[in-house]
Length: 249
Image (cartoon, rainbow, N blue to C red):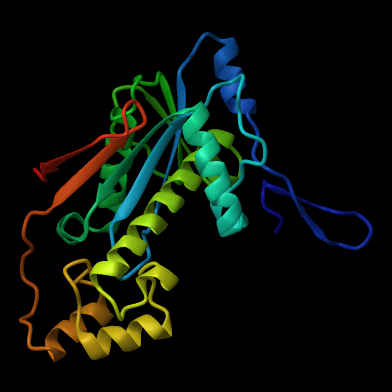
């Protein structure tokens, strides 16, 4: 079955992927509904590190060329587009740490971070597009779009910001915790990470309710996880790029 973001070439059956468009944002703009934000997250699946959510309000007159689902782009191209997005759009980023994930579960933690990113924007949007099936708890209209990072260009921009922000964070964590290879696999459960986890044990950045982490925790003398401490979450807004950190509620 061909997705909505692709069409099949009639002669050789090849799949031609079409990039996301500004069509939905433009329709709202014509109706006087603006600002419009797109939001997406990165990091639901890894064994370590936070979920990182981003919200982006693009400037209709300065939409960077080449925006696409972050998974379709090379690392170098994501970095280039990240800089263009931050130079032309309103951007905010929110983090849900492992303690939040363990307390609320991965889905709720992701939705929490996404809503927090929306509310951290320098200007509150009147409409939000979010990637996935679930709407957010926001004070403005919210529309969930399945496969949105390949359909809605504002969501694609947010997917790039979230992915680059998380990758940079994991590279910093790699300096504090050498031997795990965070800078290579970004916390995902690849064989090299599983081997390091078994050999070294989990760090404070590992998600202890995930089975491989729990097994390594027990192997290295830790008790079964029955509760988690409060952590901290950070929100970064493009309005001034300062980071504010507060205890998790």
